[in-house]
Length: 104
Length: 176
Image 1 (tube, each protein chain N blue to C red):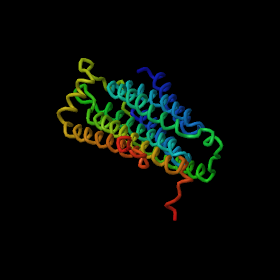
Image 2: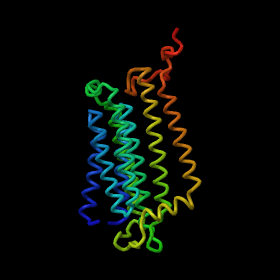
Image 3: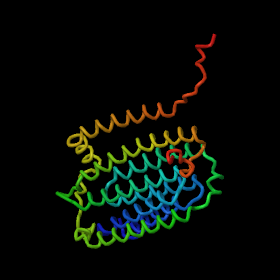
Image 4: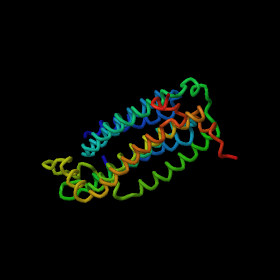
């Protein structure tokens, strides 16, 4: 197992998330794909942290960043889904192509 | 972790990740996302990040997924299944993703540090992962931890404000 293996998994996962954000039109699925991209970033951070060994310990700064990202992502999901619920109440749709009132 | 297990969990993560994108049914997408995150937690464990693997399962596969499934209950699943894929978006997305992957693989394959092997970097097994993370979190990162606490509080209050109904009928105690 080399660092490149983990980085490739992370990159492919990020690409899948990116494809989902562009291709899908359902705002909830887009949100899930954003989570996928965040997790791909987390995976590369954990991999870099593990491969920077000093005195038999991984570099914990990377893992701290992942911890903070997971916390912020949880808060972000809560707020985002509340916005989606408010949007659904106002417009009765979660399809991004129906949400065009700012297009003028 | 033995090499076959790494490939097994990587493939699990990636295949279920693709499942999130291509499933028409949002509930199936959400369940694929859970499976993908569990595979990712196993990869974290293979990198000796036991604490983060546990957090990943608890927070993502537990809390975040429950939120997603609750919101999906609001929607009309049949309406989503009737929608067609937008071919322009699919084509543009594929071009962008292939460009990204080409650039990414050229960068990673040219990266010299990427050739270190996990077996060449043994860890001190007498030290506990959670103890070390706790030490780092409460010494170097105390301030960040406090800020994240404030952020969570603000997010909680914000969600309550956002999901309150504006057009609520008058409260019962105001009735004559």
